[in-house]
Length: 113
Length: 111
Image (cartoon, rainbow over all chains, first blue to last red; front, side, top):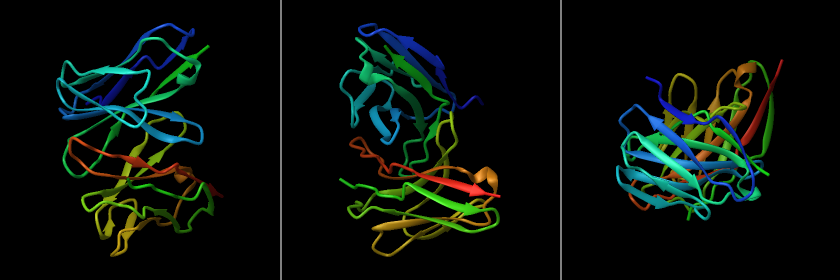
């Protein structure tokens, strides 16, 4: 089992460019999440999905879109990157039961110039 | 909406017991309390979870008082490899999930 994997590991964008971050999990988890982590801010939930074909907004959704076309994949898109989106992005998945044990990927470091 | 508060940093020495407390005054009835550990350049990793009273596993214990407004993660006999950031998470399952993460406690274990 690879667990949760994220692609790419690191990316540099110019303001206004677009990109998609890919998250994949092989644990057959129902729930998937996208977080961003900034110094002094902890983890903040961007979007999440409770199943294939469904997505919902988290705490900081503005400037991001997501899609969950397949159960194992959760994509995070930036349509027009801004310097404020410079961050480390983590994807996570969980079974979806009351016990919220989330399994995290290794993260994607994004720098927007 | 539950807000979690935890100390920014703590220092300890090898072999000591470390207790990290998280305050969550507005915890909801169906919220669980979960603690994660994060090393630099890695994603958070699950340590322990509980709903009330005490939970113990092979790496830690979690103490939750009856009012559930706080919780304490206890790490017995820490080693240098326990140097990490520890996060408290309060949340519940369901479609309208609210996952409230603390800002993390940076634990430094000294030799």
